[in-house]
Length: 130
Image (tube, rainbow, N blue to C red; front, side, top):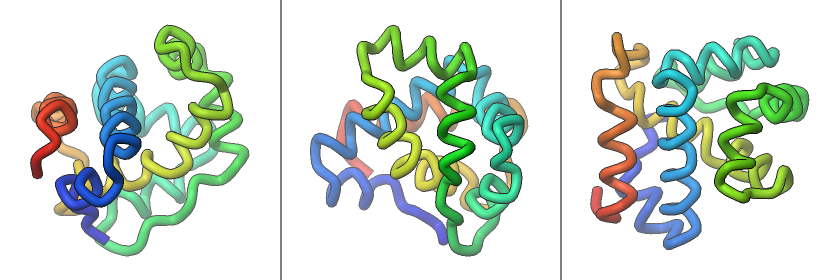
């Protein structure tokens, strides 16, 4: 649907800014946007990911995908290192992962090599401007 990160950050306040920043950091720790998409797909979320990347409506994150991601060593290690509980991590994944991936793929395509989009996302959350 074309999530606009600036609007998401402004309407969600500090909580949204922190959650979106966490997803941006997760993208970087997963080997970029394509790396994170691959992890979601491996966890059984291929159809959901297609909806987030496409220009249509975003499908919700299936609970099985959240559970699978939390078992992935890269994802679990990332949230562990940040001191985030599994409940908090699940909430971030559930609410913000589809929105962030949607916003980073506005044309319905995953950019090659991430195109610096995850760094832009992190900069955006630090500045709080869209």
